[in-house]
Amino acid sequence: MSKLATAEALNLEMEEKKELLSPGPKSKALQEKREKYVPVGPYNITPFFAESAKGAIVKDVDGNELIDFAGGIGVMNVGHSPEKVVEALKNQLDRFIHTCYHVVQFDSYVELAEKLVHLTPGDFDKKAMFLNSGAEAIENAVKIARKYTGRSAVISFTGGYHGRTNMTMALTSKVKPYKHGFGPFASETYKVPYANCYRCPYNAAYPDCGLECADALENFFATEVAPDSVAAVIAEPIQGEGGFVIPPREYFKAIKATCEKHGIVFIADEIQTGFARTGHLFAMEYFGVEPDLMALSKSIAAGIPLSAVVGKSEMMDASGAGQLGGTFAGSPLGCVAGLKVLELIEEEGLVEQSNKVGEKIRKRFLEMKAKYPIIGDVRTMGSMCALELVLDRTTKEPAAAATKGFVDKTWQNGLITLSAGLLGNVIRILPPLVIGDEELEKGLDIMDQVMGEINAEYIN
Image (tube, rainbow, N blue to C red):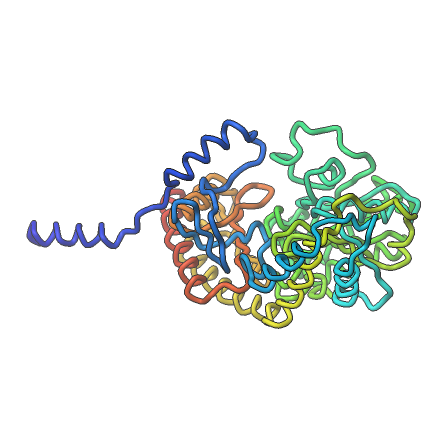
């Protein structure tokens, strides 16, 4: 090849090579203020500052556009700034912003409670109450279970994540960064192993394992805490921060049966799995289990802070007047947004759309796994999708540094992704369910490209 041809080929390659994104002057100026006035504790995944967001696209203050595969960490299932939600919020602002539900009630609180009672799993009388955050929902579910049973102990699962308050940190499994240095934690909390088929705690293989992980709960009662001291067992149907770990379909039926045998309240933490994310309105539908209590939040209100506890009426009514609630709990803005979210999920067929989006992602993930040995496992349910990265598929040595590098490289290429997992080696994505085909394919193309770079860097 001549020098001229070589130069032309090089120029063409440079023109085709996409320029990496970096913070512009406005983001840099805001970052300086952030470092001066905001503590380091509230961590930031990207260095950008949002100016606007619509659907599955976030635009920063310098005009950079990013495809959002994080969805505000599972909050934007109906997409950023959906028109019907925005309109409902504007109308509510014109009516009133706050009365405190405990002082002067309002219609949207009761109407949203009615909707959730009818939509959540369980053919029994239910009631619902509202709070501000997922952690608050968990705290109150535990309070309700303790009050109803007159017992104190609560059991959660290894790999579970339930929040950052004192009680929810105690229930959470991952030490760093969530628990390190923050003790002592709430007492009378215990953990049992979770059904992680990729990293089985019993070195068994499904389905020939006999579901030993489900038997662990009954065995736990003989060695750690008597069942008549246990108020509740709490579990995520699919572990979120734990790495999108999906247990066998029959797992939760066994757990629920053990709870029923001993009069223990079963709490489903559907904060990340709820509102069509898994291709079901709620993930417990997949497992065929009707929880006694459910904790809901994240995508409940399209980004307006809101959470809920929904459960059996006799349990919800065990607490006396004034024992549950909070000044801002169940805000008017949150409740009207929540009603519109449920309306959008039904009108736009987002449960089925979640399955369609998830199937496209799963197909591409399996193609990537076939090409890149650094991918040890692919886990998807609906559009709740993850890749576990390993340095060796046989030993399953976690590739935590590669995972961090992947997340950084994706935002540099215009795509927001998230990491997760107890070992810090899982890529999780939670794209808005309304994402367009072009945006979805472009985002997956970026993931494929970056995975190739990471694979070449870390795998010999």
